[in-house]
Structures are given as structure tokens and as C-alpha cells.
Length: 347
Image (cartoon, rainbow, N blue to C red; front, side, top):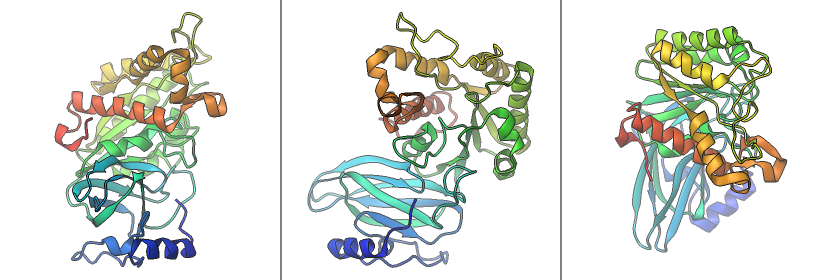
């Protein structure tokens, strides 16, 4: 996320009646708060780590506020508050460098938050180091990653808004990666694995770019990722890839392009399911779930999930589509008891 122009900051500060003062390094005693915010954004000078954020939303007039952060991550869904009332919400955020895709630009140092929604109103905010939190690491490709530019969005970019204080998303998905390149690039798996702690979840969705990977190699790579997670005491979760929006004439997606069968005849979702069963690993069958959603919406209705209207793109999702797919992942995390229901926002 770009650092804000100082003149813009000053103007916003005057209009909001707030003073924009850079946050000092956390001293372990006083939480960082509203003094680091303008009417539309907050910046906290913090080192990489995991932080709890508590906000108080509302104003004298009715308001509706959402919060995003870092590289376009959705951290809090839009929340309506009646005039004169205040509503408290909390979430835990992963702060890292690079702040978005692991092979992308470093981004802005510190924690940046942006207020959105139809009528944003932030009454108070406190940021403290997270003492007891679990991480959900994401290993994936461009359909999962924190996409840097609109209109693109990965489902991993939308997932944080559905998690409460106590669990955060560390999205290490990266555009263009296959199982081969993810394991081979030191910025990727070699960076993720040392960070995994006991109790952390690691969701793996890699397939879209394994176009020339043979079945034996693809299977072995998935097994290596599973073993690497378990070696650190984490819990691996294999995720079948989201479908491509590629219809047959009868309105179904029953073809190799839609269902990720590569040029060598490797059926990626089937291999993922097979490895999950053989290794006794939790499975989120996102292929089956996204197929059902796309087919139910039909040829026209499903265009909004992807970037067909903007880019004639039937692989990458819009913010709307990524949000729908993140909800599917959230529902599975709860249904399979991978994350306690109390730590998940539902509805």
C-alpha cells in the first residue's frame, strides 16, 4: 500500500479533527491508538509480527465501516452502526515484508489500515502485539494471493475479514507458482516453513500453473509440502483448485480446462484428493464447491465472479468472486473443526 501524500494527510486530519502523528515503537505499555489516524486511514510504525487490533466504530450519525490493510487485504467486513451508538470489533493481523506477494515489492514499512464502507466512522482504535494467536498460512498461486491491483483479488486476500481476534492469515501465495517452483524458490517454501508453529494451519492450493508437471512429480511435491508442515508441528490442509469458468454447451463445467486437467492428462483435483486420503490430511474440495456455485449462477451470472467483463479472464476472480470463494473456505474451516467457531465471523 502506498504511503499517503503529506498534503492529503494534513487536509484529511483537519477535516476530521484528528492529529496525524506517526506511531512510536511499541513500548509494551501503551497501546498505539487514534493519534495515528486520519479520517480515512491509520499508519503505525511497527516491526513485522502479529498484532491485535481493537476498533470502536460509530458516530453521532449513522455509519457503515469496513477496514482493509496492507496490500488490499479485507480485515473487517462492512459494519453498520446506528446513530449515536458504538460497536467494538477486534481482529488479528499479520504484518510482514514483503507485505503482499512474497516475490513482489516490499511495500510500506509498518501497519497501514484504510477505512472503507458507505459512511466510515472510527471512534477509537488500539493496536497491541498479539500474545496468543494462531496463524493460517496460505501456500498458493494467483487465485489465492494478495493481489496488488484492482480489479484482481485472490480468495486469500478476502479470508481475513472472516476471522476474529486470535487467528490471522499469513498469505504466502504468489502469482505464477506451481508445486515445482514453490518448493524451489527460497522466497517461498523455504521462507514459510521455518515460521510454522505447533497449532498453525497451512492451506495448500497449487495446481493452476502445474501445466507441464507429470503426475508422479505433482504427487511427490504435495507429499513434500505435507511432510514439511508436519515436521514443524503444523496441520496441513490440502485445497483443490478453484475452477476455471469454462462452460460446455449444456451449461456444465465437466471439461479438462474448467476442472484443471493439464496437457499431460494429470487431473489435479483428483490427485489432491488422493494425497489427502493417503496422508490422512484435511481436505477442502474447493473445486467441487466452486463448480457448484458457477454452474448454479450459469453462463451470465457467473461472469461477475471472475474478471470476464473487465479482462475476458475466466481464471482470476474479482473482489466479489474472491469473497464468495473465501466464504466457502471459511465454512469448511468451521465444518471440519479446523478453526473454533468462536474465532470465525459467520453471516
